[in-house]
Amino acid sequence: MTVAPICAGMSSVYDGKVTALIVAGTSSAALDPLAERAGVSDRYLVPVDGMPMIERLVMNAAMSPRIGAIRIAAREADEIAAIPSIAKLVDKGRLAFTSEAFDMVDSMSAGADGASYPILITTADNCLWLPRDFTEFADKAIASKAAAASAIARKEDVIAVDPVRQARSYEFSEGRYSSCNTYWIADACALSVAQITCSGGEFAKDTTRISEASRRDGFELVPIEMEHGYCAIAVNDEHSLHVTQKLLMKRLATA
Image (cartoon, rainbow, N blue to C red; front, side, top):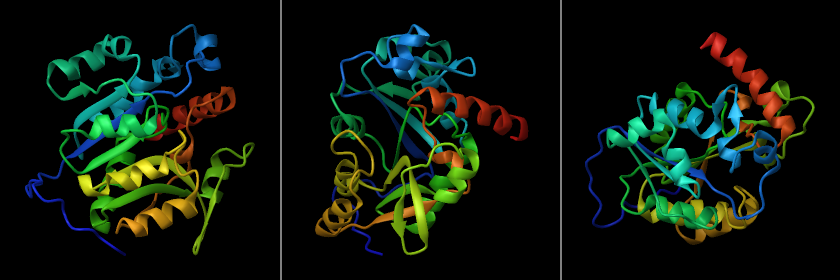
């Protein structure tokens, strides 16, 4: 494993807390079908089991003992900020919104500007992530000592919770895995690795290009295997919304 040195000028003090950067934006100006059907302005405001998905993700992240400051990169910042539970986090100084960004790369750059590292980057549609999942990923990333890491789930674990849809997966020496759209950046030097993964508006679009660019920049994007397959399910259409709501009830019942 290649681990790059900490960037010059960064503080070496680490209190065990991680900054969570939640990306809630889209590169398309068209109204998302889920948002249109729910009567809201943005997909990340669509209710999931009675709660806007952005609120659900923020609250679960906030309850993880590993998560400190929270940043949201969103176009609909005013509407999200008006959600009472999120407004409370803003008032407490724990949550802040970054400047509007057109795509994922710009959102990550704006969200990371001035933030304390390490940074955990995820998307607002990962509604099945509970506090323990954020803690699991952060703990494993810290233990790996990786400069940059990516959360993945075994393909068979994803199919086990969503047998109807065959999740896109990538070949590793240990088997096939699906992306969980969640990343770890240990310092500012490694931010370019995460930016490469989401070029074109999608995470993990071209693993070969990611690996080549990572090696070129002196980093290795370390895969972090999550315990459960539902960590790879994001709400982006009617099917995934239905599956998420069904699985969420089971998760909450056993949490």
